[in-house]
Amino acid sequence: MLENPRARLLSSSPYKQGTVVYHMCRDIRAHDNDALLYAQKLAHGKQAHLVVVYTIWNYEWLGGTQRFYDWVIPSLKEVEVTLRAHNIPLIVHVEHRRTPAYTYMETLSDVGAVVVDQIPLSFMSRWKSAFQKKYPTTPLYEVDAHNVVPVWEASSKQEFTAHAFRRKLHEKITLFVDDYSTLHKQAASLHHAPVDWQAIETNLVCRKDVSGVGSYMPGEQAAHAQLKDFFKHKLSSYEESRNAIDKDGQSNLSPYISHGNISRRRIVLELCKHLKPHQHPSQTIREIISADHNGSNGARGSAASFVEECVVRAEVAENFCFYNPDYATYEGFPSWAKETLTKARNDKREYLYTRAEFEGATTHDDIWNAAQMQMVTSGKMHGYLRMYWAKKILEWSPSPEEAMKTAVYLNDTYELDGRDSNGYVGCAWSIGGVHDRPWFGRPVFGAIRFMARSGVEKRGKIDTYIHTWLSDKHTSHD
Image (cartoon, rainbow, N blue to C red):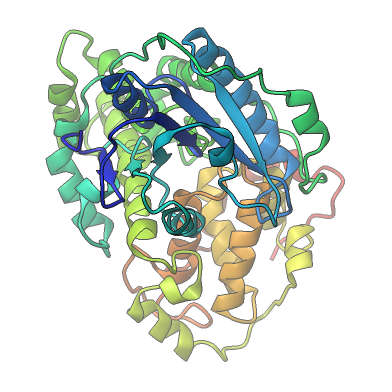
Protein backbone atom coordinates (compact mmCIF):
# COMPACT_ATOMS: atom_id res chain seq x y z
CA MET A 1 0.00 0.00 0.00
CA LEU A 2 3.00 2.30 -0.16
CA GLU A 3 1.77 3.78 -3.43
CA ASN A 4 0.17 6.42 -1.20
CA PRO A 5 2.72 9.30 -0.99
CA ARG A 6 1.15 10.48 2.25
CA ALA A 7 2.20 7.26 4.01
CA ARG A 8 5.51 5.62 4.70
CA LEU A 9 6.49 2.36 6.36
CA LEU A 10 8.92 2.83 9.25
CA SER A 11 9.41 -0.86 9.98
CA SER A 12 11.33 -3.47 8.04
CA SER A 13 8.27 -5.52 7.10
CA PRO A 14 4.78 -4.49 5.94
CA TYR A 15 1.38 -5.37 7.36
CA LYS A 16 0.21 -8.90 6.69
CA GLN A 17 -2.71 -9.63 9.00
CA GLY A 18 -4.30 -8.81 12.34
CA THR A 19 -6.00 -5.85 14.01
CA VAL A 20 -4.96 -2.42 12.72
CA VAL A 21 -4.52 0.29 15.34
CA TYR A 22 -4.66 3.94 14.37
CA HIS A 23 -2.87 5.86 17.10
CA MET A 24 -4.50 9.28 16.76
CA CYS A 25 -2.56 12.21 18.15
CA ARG A 26 -2.62 15.64 16.55
CA ASP A 27 -5.22 14.99 13.83
CA ILE A 28 -8.34 14.77 15.96
CA ARG A 29 -11.08 14.29 13.40
CA ALA A 30 -13.02 11.37 11.97
CA HIS A 31 -13.47 12.69 8.42
CA ASP A 32 -10.83 13.88 5.94
CA ASN A 33 -8.22 12.03 7.97
CA ASP A 34 -5.63 10.37 5.74
CA ALA A 35 -4.16 8.37 8.62
CA LEU A 36 -7.53 6.94 9.62
CA LEU A 37 -8.44 6.25 5.99
CA TYR A 38 -5.12 4.54 5.40
CA ALA A 39 -5.57 2.39 8.51
CA GLN A 40 -9.07 1.44 7.40
CA LYS A 41 -7.82 0.47 3.96
CA LEU A 42 -5.13 -1.73 5.51
CA ALA A 43 -7.68 -3.47 7.72
CA HIS A 44 -10.27 -3.81 4.96
CA GLY A 45 -7.76 -5.46 2.65
CA LYS A 46 -7.30 -8.29 5.17
CA GLN A 47 -10.87 -8.24 6.51
CA ALA A 48 -9.42 -7.27 9.88
CA HIS A 49 -10.62 -5.06 12.72
CA LEU A 50 -9.74 -1.37 13.01
CA VAL A 51 -9.33 0.32 16.39
CA VAL A 52 -8.56 3.98 17.10
CA VAL A 53 -6.46 4.83 20.18
CA TYR A 54 -5.76 8.23 21.73
CA THR A 55 -3.26 8.65 24.57
CA ILE A 56 -3.71 11.15 27.40
CA TRP A 57 -0.49 11.95 29.27
CA ASN A 58 -1.68 12.01 32.83
CA TYR A 59 1.26 13.89 34.32
CA GLU A 60 2.50 17.46 34.11
CA TRP A 61 4.27 18.41 30.90
CA LEU A 62 4.87 21.72 29.11
CA GLY A 63 1.57 22.58 27.46
CA GLY A 64 -0.36 20.04 29.52
CA THR A 65 -2.91 22.52 30.81
CA GLN A 66 -6.62 22.44 31.47
CA ARG A 67 -6.91 24.71 28.43
CA PHE A 68 -5.32 22.01 26.25
CA TYR A 69 -7.81 19.42 27.48
CA ASP A 70 -10.70 21.89 27.28
CA TRP A 71 -10.08 21.70 23.54
CA VAL A 72 -8.96 18.10 23.11
CA ILE A 73 -11.64 16.30 25.12
CA PRO A 74 -14.68 17.87 23.39
CA SER A 75 -12.95 17.16 20.07
CA LEU A 76 -12.45 13.52 21.04
CA LYS A 77 -16.04 13.17 22.22
CA GLU A 78 -17.20 14.28 18.78
CA VAL A 79 -14.79 11.83 17.14
CA GLU A 80 -16.05 8.98 19.30
CA VAL A 81 -19.66 9.56 18.22
CA THR A 82 -18.71 9.53 14.54
CA LEU A 83 -16.46 6.49 14.87
CA ARG A 84 -19.09 4.46 16.72
CA ALA A 85 -21.58 5.31 13.97
CA HIS A 86 -19.07 3.65 11.65
CA ASN A 87 -18.66 0.65 13.99
CA ILE A 88 -15.11 1.71 14.91
CA PRO A 89 -14.19 1.80 18.62
CA LEU A 90 -12.21 4.63 20.22
CA ILE A 91 -9.98 3.72 23.14
CA VAL A 92 -8.59 6.53 25.28
CA HIS A 93 -5.42 5.26 26.91
CA VAL A 94 -4.23 7.07 30.04
CA GLU A 95 -0.45 7.08 30.26
CA HIS A 96 1.20 7.67 33.61
CA ARG A 97 4.83 8.73 33.87
CA ARG A 98 6.04 5.26 34.83
CA THR A 99 3.63 3.38 32.59
CA PRO A 100 4.80 2.30 29.12
CA ALA A 101 3.19 4.31 26.36
CA TYR A 102 1.87 1.23 24.63
CA THR A 103 0.01 -0.70 27.33
CA TYR A 104 -3.06 -0.66 25.10
CA MET A 105 -1.13 -3.08 22.86
CA GLU A 106 -1.39 -5.69 25.62
CA THR A 107 -5.17 -5.31 25.87
CA LEU A 108 -5.78 -5.85 22.17
CA SER A 109 -5.56 -9.25 20.58
CA ASP A 110 -3.55 -9.92 17.44
CA VAL A 111 -2.30 -6.41 16.61
CA GLY A 112 -1.01 -6.58 13.06
CA ALA A 113 -0.01 -2.95 12.40
CA VAL A 114 -0.01 0.49 13.98
CA VAL A 115 -0.59 3.72 12.04
CA VAL A 116 0.49 7.04 13.58
CA ASP A 117 0.08 10.70 12.67
CA GLN A 118 3.10 12.44 11.18
CA ILE A 119 4.27 14.90 13.84
CA PRO A 120 7.68 16.54 13.29
CA LEU A 121 8.33 17.13 16.99
CA SER A 122 10.82 15.47 19.30
CA PHE A 123 8.30 13.69 21.52
CA MET A 124 6.97 11.81 18.49
CA SER A 125 10.47 10.85 17.37
CA ARG A 126 11.06 9.37 20.83
CA TRP A 127 7.69 7.60 20.72
CA LYS A 128 8.43 5.98 17.35
CA SER A 129 11.92 4.87 18.40
CA ALA A 130 10.66 3.38 21.65
CA PHE A 131 7.77 1.62 19.91
CA GLN A 132 10.04 0.01 17.34
CA LYS A 133 12.40 -1.12 20.06
CA LYS A 134 9.59 -2.71 22.09
CA TYR A 135 7.64 -4.12 19.12
CA PRO A 136 10.26 -4.71 16.40
CA THR A 137 8.05 -7.12 14.44
CA THR A 138 4.92 -4.95 14.42
CA PRO A 139 4.65 -2.86 11.22
CA LEU A 140 4.57 0.86 11.99
CA TYR A 141 3.23 3.29 9.41
CA GLU A 142 3.41 7.08 9.51
CA VAL A 143 0.86 9.15 7.60
CA ASP A 144 0.95 12.89 6.99
CA ALA A 145 -2.69 13.84 7.47
CA HIS A 146 -1.84 17.41 8.42
CA ASN A 147 -0.24 19.09 5.41
CA VAL A 148 -1.41 19.70 1.86
CA VAL A 149 1.89 18.36 0.54
CA PRO A 150 3.37 15.64 2.79
CA VAL A 151 6.41 17.01 4.59
CA TRP A 152 8.77 14.44 3.05
CA GLU A 153 7.36 15.13 -0.43
CA ALA A 154 7.58 18.93 -0.16
CA SER A 155 11.37 18.79 0.24
CA SER A 156 14.01 16.20 1.05
CA LYS A 157 16.00 18.62 3.21
CA GLN A 158 15.72 21.61 5.50
CA GLU A 159 14.96 24.73 3.50
CA PHE A 160 16.68 27.83 4.87
CA THR A 161 14.45 30.39 3.15
CA ALA A 162 10.72 30.61 2.66
CA HIS A 163 11.39 31.60 -0.95
CA ALA A 164 13.13 28.32 -1.79
CA PHE A 165 10.45 26.28 -0.04
CA ARG A 166 7.62 28.26 -1.65
CA ARG A 167 8.94 27.48 -5.11
CA LYS A 168 9.05 23.74 -4.38
CA LEU A 169 5.62 23.72 -2.76
CA HIS A 170 4.04 25.65 -5.62
CA GLU A 171 5.46 23.11 -8.07
CA LYS A 172 3.89 20.19 -6.19
CA ILE A 173 0.71 21.49 -4.61
CA THR A 174 -1.51 20.84 -7.64
CA LEU A 175 -0.65 17.13 -7.33
CA PHE A 176 -1.98 16.98 -3.77
CA VAL A 177 -5.36 18.73 -3.87
CA ASP A 178 -7.27 15.54 -4.59
CA ASP A 179 -10.47 15.12 -2.60
CA TYR A 180 -10.76 12.68 0.27
CA SER A 181 -12.21 9.21 0.09
CA THR A 182 -15.08 8.33 2.42
CA LEU A 183 -14.82 6.68 5.82
CA HIS A 184 -16.78 3.42 5.60
CA LYS A 185 -18.75 1.62 8.25
CA GLN A 186 -16.81 -1.33 9.58
CA ALA A 187 -18.61 -4.64 9.07
CA ALA A 188 -17.73 -6.00 12.50
CA SER A 189 -16.24 -4.38 15.53
CA LEU A 190 -14.16 -5.47 18.49
CA HIS A 191 -16.31 -4.89 21.56
CA HIS A 192 -15.20 -1.92 23.62
CA ALA A 193 -17.27 0.03 26.09
CA PRO A 194 -17.80 3.73 25.44
CA VAL A 195 -15.11 6.00 26.81
CA ASP A 196 -15.68 6.93 30.47
CA TRP A 197 -15.19 10.65 29.96
CA GLN A 198 -16.24 11.55 33.49
CA ALA A 199 -13.48 9.42 34.98
CA ILE A 200 -10.91 10.83 32.56
CA GLU A 201 -11.87 14.45 33.23
CA THR A 202 -12.05 13.93 37.00
CA ASN A 203 -8.59 12.41 37.17
CA LEU A 204 -6.71 14.69 34.77
CA VAL A 205 -3.25 15.67 35.96
CA CYS A 206 -2.44 19.02 34.40
CA ARG A 207 -1.90 22.69 35.13
CA LYS A 208 -5.37 23.75 36.25
CA ASP A 209 -4.82 27.52 36.43
CA VAL A 210 -4.60 27.82 32.62
CA SER A 211 -8.05 26.96 31.30
CA GLY A 212 -10.81 27.89 28.91
CA VAL A 213 -10.95 28.25 25.13
CA GLY A 214 -12.34 31.76 24.93
CA SER A 215 -15.11 32.24 22.39
CA TYR A 216 -14.15 29.13 20.41
CA MET A 217 -16.12 25.92 20.10
CA PRO A 218 -13.70 22.98 19.64
CA GLY A 219 -14.22 20.13 17.21
CA GLU A 220 -14.57 19.14 13.59
CA GLN A 221 -18.02 20.62 12.99
CA ALA A 222 -17.01 23.91 14.57
CA ALA A 223 -13.88 24.02 12.38
CA HIS A 224 -15.98 23.80 9.23
CA ALA A 225 -18.34 26.46 10.56
CA GLN A 226 -15.39 28.73 11.27
CA LEU A 227 -14.08 28.20 7.74
CA LYS A 228 -17.45 29.03 6.16
CA ASP A 229 -17.73 32.16 8.27
CA PHE A 230 -14.26 33.26 7.17
CA PHE A 231 -15.10 32.80 3.50
CA LYS A 232 -18.38 34.66 3.87
CA HIS A 233 -17.26 37.64 5.95
CA LYS A 234 -13.46 38.02 5.82
CA LEU A 235 -11.82 36.45 2.78
CA SER A 236 -12.43 39.36 0.42
CA SER A 237 -10.64 41.79 2.74
CA TYR A 238 -8.08 39.39 4.20
CA GLU A 239 -5.05 40.91 2.47
CA GLU A 240 -5.70 44.38 3.89
CA SER A 241 -7.15 43.50 7.29
CA ARG A 242 -5.25 40.46 8.58
CA ASN A 243 -2.56 42.62 10.23
CA ALA A 244 -4.92 45.32 11.48
CA ILE A 245 -4.90 45.06 15.25
CA ASP A 246 -8.26 46.81 15.66
CA LYS A 247 -10.01 44.42 13.24
CA ASP A 248 -10.86 40.76 13.53
CA GLY A 249 -9.52 40.12 10.05
CA GLN A 250 -7.73 36.84 10.59
CA SER A 251 -9.22 33.45 9.82
CA ASN A 252 -9.00 32.23 13.46
CA LEU A 253 -8.48 28.71 12.10
CA SER A 254 -5.11 28.08 13.74
CA PRO A 255 -6.41 26.27 16.86
CA TYR A 256 -8.53 23.99 14.67
CA ILE A 257 -5.61 23.22 12.38
CA SER A 258 -3.19 22.73 15.25
CA HIS A 259 -5.46 20.17 16.92
CA GLY A 260 -6.31 18.54 13.62
CA ASN A 261 -10.03 19.34 13.69
CA ILE A 262 -9.60 20.32 10.05
CA SER A 263 -6.79 19.74 7.56
CA ARG A 264 -5.09 22.36 5.45
CA ARG A 265 -5.94 20.27 2.39
CA ARG A 266 -9.66 20.49 3.18
CA ILE A 267 -9.27 24.24 3.67
CA VAL A 268 -7.64 24.58 0.25
CA LEU A 269 -10.30 22.40 -1.37
CA GLU A 270 -13.08 24.49 0.14
CA LEU A 271 -11.31 27.69 -0.86
CA CYS A 272 -11.14 26.51 -4.46
CA LYS A 273 -14.78 25.45 -4.37
CA HIS A 274 -15.74 28.83 -2.95
CA LEU A 275 -13.90 30.75 -5.68
CA LYS A 276 -14.53 28.49 -8.68
CA PRO A 277 -17.18 25.88 -7.82
CA HIS A 278 -17.22 24.36 -11.32
CA GLN A 279 -13.46 24.23 -11.86
CA HIS A 280 -11.07 21.49 -10.77
CA PRO A 281 -9.21 22.51 -7.59
CA SER A 282 -5.81 21.95 -9.19
CA GLN A 283 -6.54 24.63 -11.77
CA THR A 284 -7.93 27.04 -9.20
CA ILE A 285 -4.99 26.67 -6.83
CA ARG A 286 -2.65 27.18 -9.78
CA GLU A 287 -4.38 30.46 -10.52
CA ILE A 288 -4.27 31.52 -6.87
CA ILE A 289 -0.57 30.93 -6.35
CA SER A 290 0.31 32.67 -9.59
CA ALA A 291 -1.53 35.82 -8.50
CA ASP A 292 0.50 38.80 -7.38
CA HIS A 293 -0.08 38.91 -3.62
CA ASN A 294 0.08 42.69 -3.54
CA GLY A 295 -1.16 43.58 -6.99
CA SER A 296 -4.52 41.84 -7.18
CA ASN A 297 -7.74 43.26 -5.86
CA GLY A 298 -10.60 41.56 -4.07
CA ALA A 299 -10.92 37.89 -3.30
CA ARG A 300 -8.20 36.73 -5.71
CA GLY A 301 -5.46 38.82 -4.02
CA SER A 302 -6.72 37.90 -0.59
CA ALA A 303 -6.92 34.23 -1.56
CA ALA A 304 -3.26 34.29 -2.59
CA SER A 305 -2.35 35.95 0.70
CA PHE A 306 -4.41 33.40 2.64
CA VAL A 307 -2.74 30.45 0.90
CA GLU A 308 0.65 32.01 1.64
CA GLU A 309 -0.14 32.23 5.36
CA CYS A 310 -2.22 29.09 5.83
CA VAL A 311 -0.20 26.74 3.62
CA VAL A 312 3.23 28.01 2.58
CA ARG A 313 4.27 29.58 5.89
CA ALA A 314 2.77 26.74 7.89
CA GLU A 315 4.37 24.00 5.83
CA VAL A 316 7.80 25.61 5.75
CA ALA A 317 7.52 25.51 9.55
CA GLU A 318 6.78 21.78 9.29
CA ASN A 319 9.87 21.41 7.10
CA PHE A 320 12.05 23.15 9.69
CA CYS A 321 10.87 21.02 12.61
CA PHE A 322 10.96 17.81 10.56
CA TYR A 323 14.60 18.20 9.52
CA ASN A 324 16.03 20.21 12.46
CA PRO A 325 15.85 18.47 15.86
CA ASP A 326 16.87 21.74 17.57
CA TYR A 327 13.75 23.54 16.32
CA ALA A 328 12.79 24.85 19.78
CA THR A 329 16.19 26.09 20.94
CA TYR A 330 18.93 28.59 20.17
CA GLU A 331 20.96 25.77 18.59
CA GLY A 332 18.44 25.55 15.77
CA PHE A 333 19.08 29.12 14.61
CA PRO A 334 21.01 29.60 11.34
CA SER A 335 24.76 30.17 11.62
CA TRP A 336 24.60 33.85 10.63
CA ALA A 337 22.06 34.53 13.36
CA LYS A 338 24.04 32.77 16.09
CA GLU A 339 27.15 34.64 15.00
CA THR A 340 25.49 38.06 15.13
CA LEU A 341 23.69 37.31 18.40
CA THR A 342 27.00 36.19 19.92
CA LYS A 343 28.61 39.50 18.98
CA ALA A 344 25.70 41.35 20.57
CA ARG A 345 25.57 39.14 23.65
CA ASN A 346 27.14 41.70 26.01
CA ASP A 347 25.28 44.72 24.67
CA LYS A 348 23.54 46.77 27.35
CA ARG A 349 19.85 45.99 27.77
CA GLU A 350 17.73 48.94 28.82
CA TYR A 351 15.25 46.59 30.46
CA LEU A 352 15.64 43.05 31.81
CA TYR A 353 12.73 40.89 32.95
CA THR A 354 12.45 37.49 34.55
CA ARG A 355 10.21 34.77 33.16
CA ALA A 356 7.74 35.44 35.98
CA GLU A 357 7.59 39.14 35.06
CA PHE A 358 6.96 38.27 31.42
CA GLU A 359 4.31 35.75 32.38
CA GLY A 360 2.60 38.25 34.65
CA ALA A 361 2.58 40.97 31.95
CA THR A 362 4.43 43.43 34.18
CA THR A 363 6.84 44.98 31.68
CA HIS A 364 7.06 48.75 31.04
CA ASP A 365 5.42 48.31 27.58
CA ASP A 366 1.62 48.39 27.63
CA ILE A 367 1.33 46.99 24.10
CA TRP A 368 3.43 43.99 25.07
CA ASN A 369 1.51 43.55 28.31
CA ALA A 370 -1.81 43.70 26.45
CA ALA A 371 -0.65 41.08 23.94
CA GLN A 372 0.49 38.81 26.76
CA MET A 373 -2.84 39.23 28.57
CA GLN A 374 -4.78 38.54 25.39
CA MET A 375 -2.95 35.23 25.13
CA VAL A 376 -3.33 34.39 28.83
CA THR A 377 -7.01 35.31 28.87
CA SER A 378 -8.28 34.09 25.51
CA GLY A 379 -5.70 31.55 24.37
CA LYS A 380 -4.92 33.47 21.19
CA MET A 381 -2.78 36.51 20.51
CA HIS A 382 -3.23 38.65 17.39
CA GLY A 383 -0.91 37.22 14.72
CA TYR A 384 0.92 40.45 13.99
CA LEU A 385 1.59 41.07 17.66
CA ARG A 386 3.07 37.60 18.12
CA MET A 387 6.11 38.84 16.19
CA TYR A 388 6.44 42.01 18.27
CA TRP A 389 5.87 40.01 21.47
CA ALA A 390 8.68 37.54 20.72
CA LYS A 391 11.15 40.18 19.53
CA LYS A 392 10.70 42.18 22.72
CA ILE A 393 11.40 39.05 24.75
CA LEU A 394 14.77 38.94 22.95
CA GLU A 395 15.36 42.63 23.65
CA TRP A 396 14.55 42.31 27.37
CA SER A 397 16.21 38.96 28.17
CA PRO A 398 19.80 38.44 29.36
CA SER A 399 20.62 36.15 26.42
CA PRO A 400 19.06 34.85 23.19
CA GLU A 401 19.05 31.34 24.68
CA GLU A 402 16.96 32.53 27.61
CA ALA A 403 14.71 34.54 25.29
CA MET A 404 13.90 31.48 23.18
CA LYS A 405 13.20 29.39 26.28
CA THR A 406 10.85 32.04 27.64
CA ALA A 407 8.99 32.51 24.35
CA VAL A 408 8.52 28.76 23.87
CA TYR A 409 7.37 28.31 27.46
CA LEU A 410 4.78 31.08 27.25
CA ASN A 411 3.58 30.04 23.78
CA ASP A 412 3.21 26.37 24.70
CA THR A 413 1.54 27.13 28.02
CA TYR A 414 -1.08 29.65 26.94
CA GLU A 415 -1.71 29.48 23.19
CA LEU A 416 -4.52 27.26 21.95
CA ASP A 417 -2.29 26.51 18.96
CA GLY A 418 0.85 26.02 21.05
CA ARG A 419 3.08 22.92 20.94
CA ASP A 420 3.00 23.25 17.15
CA SER A 421 5.53 23.74 14.36
CA ASN A 422 4.11 27.18 13.59
CA GLY A 423 4.67 28.35 17.13
CA TYR A 424 8.25 27.12 17.34
CA VAL A 425 9.19 28.64 14.00
CA GLY A 426 7.39 31.87 14.84
CA CYS A 427 9.56 32.21 17.93
CA ALA A 428 12.68 31.14 16.03
CA TRP A 429 11.98 33.62 13.20
CA SER A 430 11.49 36.49 15.62
CA ILE A 431 14.41 35.72 17.93
CA GLY A 432 16.81 33.76 15.73
CA GLY A 433 16.26 34.82 12.12
CA VAL A 434 14.98 31.42 10.92
CA HIS A 435 13.75 31.76 7.30
CA ASP A 436 14.78 35.41 7.40
CA ARG A 437 17.92 37.27 6.28
CA PRO A 438 20.42 39.56 8.03
CA TRP A 439 19.28 43.14 8.53
CA PHE A 440 21.04 46.32 9.59
CA GLY A 441 22.96 45.81 12.83
CA ARG A 442 21.76 47.27 16.10
CA PRO A 443 22.42 46.67 19.82
CA VAL A 444 21.16 43.40 21.34
CA PHE A 445 19.57 42.25 18.05
CA GLY A 446 22.71 42.26 15.96
CA ALA A 447 21.48 41.62 12.42
CA ILE A 448 18.15 40.10 13.55
CA ARG A 449 15.16 42.00 12.18
CA PHE A 450 13.93 44.63 14.65
CA MET A 451 10.34 45.69 15.31
CA ALA A 452 9.59 49.08 16.85
CA ARG A 453 6.59 50.14 18.85
CA SER A 454 5.93 52.89 16.30
CA GLY A 455 5.35 50.27 13.62
CA VAL A 456 2.76 48.49 15.75
CA GLU A 457 0.97 51.75 16.47
CA LYS A 458 0.30 52.15 12.74
CA ARG A 459 -1.64 48.88 12.64
CA GLY A 460 -4.90 50.21 14.04
CA LYS A 461 -6.44 51.70 17.15
CA ILE A 462 -3.80 50.47 19.55
CA ASP A 463 -5.26 52.32 22.56
CA THR A 464 -8.50 50.39 22.17
CA TYR A 465 -6.55 47.13 22.02
CA ILE A 466 -4.58 48.03 25.14
CA HIS A 467 -7.72 49.00 27.06
CA THR A 468 -9.49 45.79 26.01
CA TRP A 469 -6.83 43.46 27.33
CA LEU A 470 -5.30 45.35 30.24
CA SER A 471 -8.45 46.79 31.84
CA ASP A 472 -7.34 47.66 35.37
CA LYS A 473 -3.64 46.83 34.86
CA HIS A 474 -1.23 49.75 34.94
CA THR A 475 -0.43 51.02 31.45
CA SER A 476 2.51 53.10 30.31
CA HIS A 477 4.55 53.87 27.21
CA ASP A 478 8.23 53.49 26.40
